[in-house]
Amino acid sequence: MTSALPSTSPARIQGWCPGALQPMRAEDGWVLRVRPPLGRLTQVQAAGIAALAARYALHTVELTSRANLQLRGIAEADYPPLLAGLQALGLVDANVRTESRRNLLLAPFWQVGDGSTEMAQALAQALASPQAPELPGKFGFALDGGTTPVLRAGSADVRIERHGADWLVYADGSATGALVGAGQAVAMAMDLAHWFVQAGGLTGPRRRMAALLASHALPARFATTALPFVAPYQSPLGRVPQGYLVALEFGQLPVATLAALADVAPMRLTPWRSLLLEGVQSLPAQPALITRTDDTRLRISACTGAPGCGQAAGLTRSLARKLADVLPAGQTLHVSGCSKGCAHPAQTLTVVVTTTGYNLIHHGNAAAIPDVTGLSPAALAIQLQERAHATPL
Ligand code: SF4
Image (cartoon, rainbow, N blue to C red; front, side):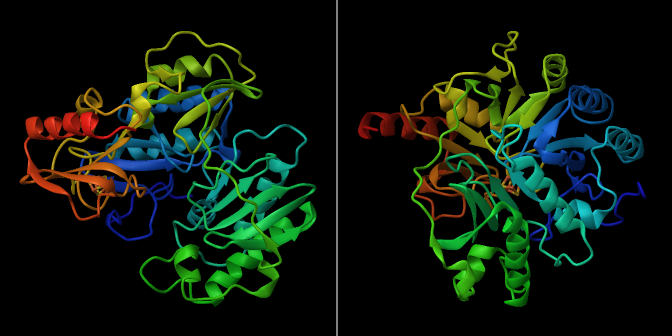
């Protein structure tokens, strides 16, 4: 296995995601992502990542919306020993092809014996096989094995949901799917991935399933069963049957906090930038941990911004923290360093940092046409305060 860095940075190739074997160059050094098998870290793995990040990366590990861990600020000379450390922890795939395809989101509330982890392992094996289709880097699978789906808002192209005694396999963006037994679900999911390629999904600007469905009808075998309605899912925090859920502001996990949590229990990563500590009923006090759903820090989000991202026109997270104080009750806010808005495609109150001031979008993502442009920090705060008085939420 090579530990050489790519000779050119693929940072701006559309549809590409970094991995441990394929790091990405950013303004503040190299960025790599760890995809823990089944989205789970043993205590040894968690402690090992904390130690590696403390030595070779920025001292904050980032939780991503695909339930991965991101390490950034890595110097070129530190990449080989960091990769070797991750490999020793069993957190790196055998090769780039396997790593880039194992894009699998597993609902974190699985229980031993409910079949979820076995199905996830079978799907990972199928994706690693030579017969698996070549899929775009962002193409992913979601496996939702609880009695109620919790991953519908998560990024995925092929979805597998428990449906009574069977499993519903469906394409993202479709209102119907194929209802099959547990033994056929993985094969059906791979069938859908093959269809995506054969139908031309690799061409075009988006290269995602929902975009393909706008112009192509699914085969009849994926139209046998209507998707049941499911209300938008809001993750709890604190005690859950499987343990204790904690969130982090902006998904930023200080290495000292990760090391402290590693002493407590194994942990599962969630797509909600939180961690589920297995079998735990209470936690030692850690200021970085958010344990209540009414915590204001959960209502703000921000992309990396400057100085980590070369496309950012300024700081994002410090601005989001300041604006949280004047945010109307119940209102969420996203701050984006540019109009690309890569960290938050959903529509909400959005501030975009530009070289000529702050643009405000009342309800949209960062790419939307701004409602107000060129605001100073003070004018921006006033706009939000006025909104608090004008908008009953
Ligand atoms: S949205 Fe943020 S992180 Fe993404 S490219 Fe723009 S500034 Fe960079």
